[in-house]
Length: 153
Image (tube, rainbow, N blue to C red; front, side, top):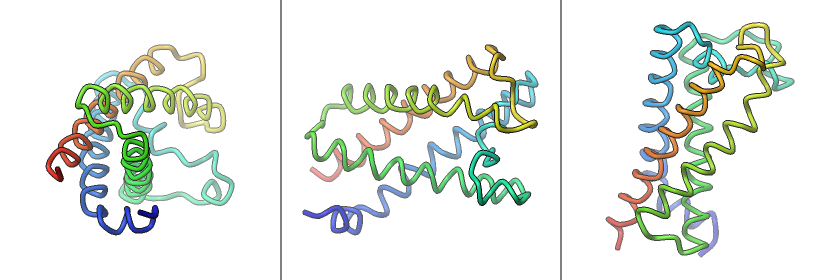
């Protein structure tokens, strides 16, 4: 089955599996930022490092929409990866989803240097919360992917 066919057959599961954990992720970071002042929610929604987007200011709802689009794209990639590698166990799917999301979190955190609004790159409290959030997101994403894959068997 081609990638296009796979996405066509699974688009609703991919969308739900990306949107719900993505919303939880955003709400978790919004709560952390509100309670602690660590600007992890601001960093999550930040697009200052993307050339075209940095020239505009977007309302929070549009920034959250950008985040959810990325979440759905990542979910589709993970669905495809797990399908191609025949990863089917709950433990493996969750473990890989957590690992991949922690890696993404570490890779993206340095983009904080490109904005005045986000935490300093040396703000290890924000980095800690950032990684905790990516762990939680990875866990939820893995759980949703597993539930979807196991219900199709």
